[in-house]
Length: 78
Image (cartoon, rainbow, N blue to C red):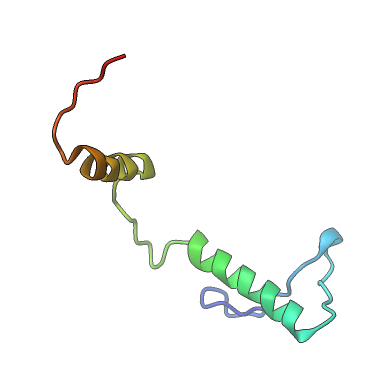
């Protein structure tokens, strides 16, 4: 069972067929629970916040520009 901040009620971790999943050990249960908590934290916005920033492509291009070209224009030739 997981109980997350947005959902005040306990939620079972479901297996195939919509049945609650049974675990063989405490470690397996903890690992699966942490997976669900991490997915919850990474998958939802907090209090409606929107993160405005460059796209991954733009950020990678800017970093490569700083690293390899040092911000200067370079001629491309074949």
